[in-house]
Amino acid sequence: MDGVAELPVSATPERRSKRLSLHLSDPRPWNDDSGGEGEDDLILGSLADVSVDEDEEENVPEASSWRYLWDARRVALTPARRTWSAESSVERPVDRPVRHDDLDVLAEALPVPPELSWCSPDSASEALPFLQRVLDEILLDHYVEDAECAHRVKCSLAALEWSLLGPNAVPEDLILGLRDASGAIVAFITATPMSLFIDGSETRVALIDYVCVHRAWRSQRLCPLLYQEVQRRCRARGIQVHIKTTGQDLPGAIASSQFFHFLMPHALQKLMVVGFTYVPVQGPRNWEHVVQNHPQNRSPEESGVTLVPLTVELLESARKLHQDHSMRLFPRLARVYDSVAFAHDLLPRDGVVTTLVRVEGGEVTDLISFSHLETVHQHATTEDGWEQGAWSGMEKLEFRSVLTGEIRSERPQGELVLRSIRAAHLVYNVAETVPRQELISAALSHLEASGIDVVSALDIMGLWKESLVTAGFGVGTGLLRYYICGLQFSDIEPEEIAIKPGV
Image (cartoon, rainbow, N blue to C red; front, side):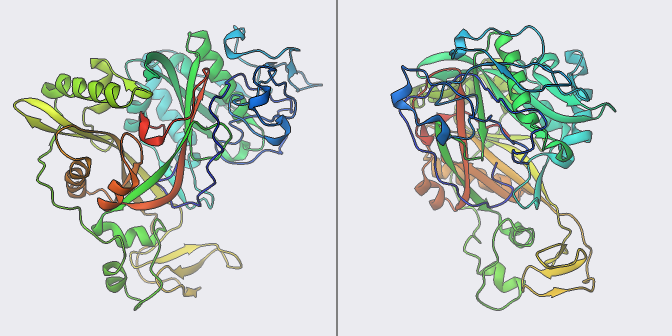
């Protein structure tokens, strides 16, 4: 995901009108370390041994041209039946290519390497203690890093409860981890059931999220296993369609959306110190001048729109507004909400979700919602921009000035701490009676008053680059890509998407 740091833009995947979603097959052994080391390492499996469906052959590239694929989009794979033994740890594929609907749902969990075992909450009542354990043992230290490991998402138990324990959750089955011989959790994945409006029809899907592998286990190819097992469990519950969002550039994305960021003036110096945004190279080297002349140093525009937090009394009015707006304007991919799920996802929670509405005559006429996320810079810094760390050719305890580039070995004045970025991510915007730009500007003022450092948005749900830039957002360097498995789905423009992304 973007939002924690500005990362290089990868080329948008080539688009094709229709794509086939099938089963993941990976003939390499568990201990093959030829994969990458990211937390999403091989979401997708190797295509070293694939079969192409003759009906689709003319529409797909040669199998050898794709190394990785998430749940085998584009190319039909032979589904695998995993077996494990001390002598051989390779998958044994069956000898015919089949579509997703043809797959037999295995009754038992997939085999794992001998030193690992599956674990899940014993019941729904045990889900919160289980998530606290997951948070302590793996997520706080190993979840979502940028390429330089300079920033990491700081999950909270409240955010996990909001994301994973909604009214449709099945925690005892779809929140799962892998634990080692000592009982410590070393890998984690979740799937959250929900209903989406897809090409005019309501469809039950599962959002796959929070994929994380302990850094010490990232050469063991656990990600393909995690994805296969959670998809097996979803299919066993009748959920055939699975959705995933990621910043990785993988074949088969149905859409790629651009990140945009609004930097709050009060946090601009800190955002430069931790490397979220750049330090201008021209002009005097003092913070006052640098902050004043930063191109994104602007306060939220004044707006005549009055917004108030969503309350229980306004829930049903807000839900009807959201559903009518989504089904009418975004029929290709939108979220379907009943009253209970809408209340869970959008009622304000401190530090987790903010929903603001415009009310006229007792009815909600416009709505905008944000989820909150905190990221931590992994190098200790002083308030005036001295950073402790290791760079190319530097010793571990050397210090660099973010402002001037000076490097020194003596400890600078000021307290060295790991600094956090408080971010708000735009989830839903429903502008019916006011322009979207004015609705966003009004919301930015509320977020600035609450101490948010940066607001991130995607060009989805009717938002265009021009409207976001006019509202003061800068163009980010990150892309978020959407993947759908289990059904044929033609490519979609980002502005046609009306679902909140996973974390």
